Length: 396
Image 1 (cartoon, rainbow, N blue to C red):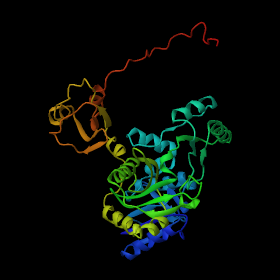
Image 2 (tube, rainbow, N blue to C red):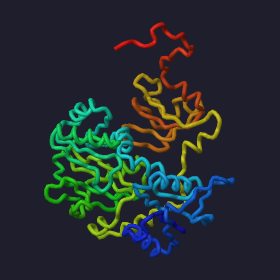
Image 3 (cartoon, rainbow, N blue to C red):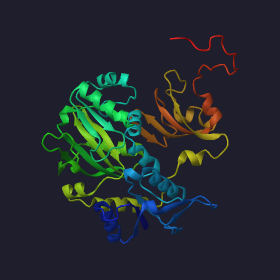
Image 4 (cartoon, one colour):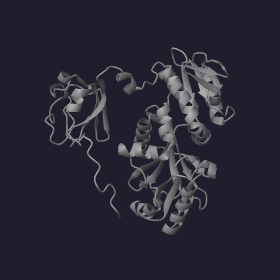
């Protein structure tokens, strides 16, 4: 295959290892500076310029998008997607993972266990927020910090309040997170490729430092993950839309607690710790998947007037509970079930004989009016504009 590695750091270890692994396998590979692309929207089809000239055809790209160029970098990846070029990490996945708040919101929606987290903006809400996550000490995180930068441990409530107030005064957005004492300055980095963990390491903080990042002087050791940790890592990466990801987890008393999903994980520390050819595993995965470029399913399925994608919830009093999908009447309404979500279980392309249960969530494609009719009616507000009241504003 012909592969482009998108990176502004061509001499970095990770970039060089990926390039070498691709060359060793007989692929054609180039490292292209992400910032030298131009997105061309002037022609009949999506196109890209590189260094002022039309880009040649590539079978796949491997984005290494740094934090400082997220907006432009994801725009370039998105253009490759529009050109049907395969990428293991989608532009949406990269954007989702880069924003700690957005990532936490998405993972929380899918019941992924994480340290208790809250986000507030008004000073009056800070102390209640600290109490909601279990009280001090708390961890304060900048939304866009990396490599342990912008992660602060506040030992008591007063210090936490002062730190948050100071950061917010400089227009910084911060998360407030429970300090997981039992992790004892340790965490797990699992490297996910496709639907499996190819390597994992434990990072241990030095001295009194609670951040275990290698860039903060932490030590690393290879580790064999329990199935529970491996499943949490793979599921988190998949939820974020990433096929190559570093998933950081704390070892909580009740199991793995996902802290972060990194879309451009460094390879040096984990390859040195595990002595495994992780770069080669990434290249092999891309080679096996290159014929299946990422598709924006909602975009593709919504081009037909009156048809689209929607999620239907099976409520407790729904008449289709206990019925097989084939007998539920959905097909007669021109509705096809693409995926069935049952708790944390995902059943893709469910069979007609699959029986529906209360609280199932069905990702469907079909006639929007028919799907709209299956959603419980909400009380509609009056659409007529009323006259302005005599007292438009109440005092107090």
